[in-house]
Length: 143
Image 1 (cartoon, rainbow, N blue to C red):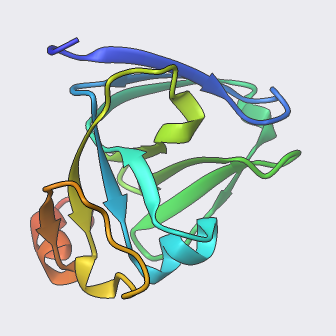
Image 2 (image 1 turned 180 degrees about the vertical axis):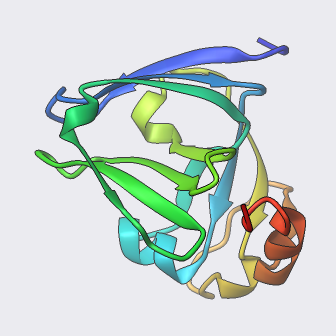
């Protein structure tokens, strides 16, 4: 689906269900310390999300992980549901949450300067340092 797609998924216990519209079938990896602490490794996520619809939103707990962003998870089973900017204009949805066997394209790695040396992806990707990420979102995170 070159012009976008809708992916669906749910948390482990089924209390939260998502429908996610993405502009492209691409995923990125975040190597920042917070993502690696949150999930035990890099966050592999859909980054071109244009809309998120949730059923069971009363089962979502949101944690403000920084001044500009927050992370959502199911309060029953702990499944990671999203990372989003508090301004509400950017969502990252873990690809494993909505993967239905689509032909994903892994094309970006961010906070590459925080990536530990013990792993490396073989894919050719655009690699951004933490500062490059902050520069790209400057102005979007201040609202």
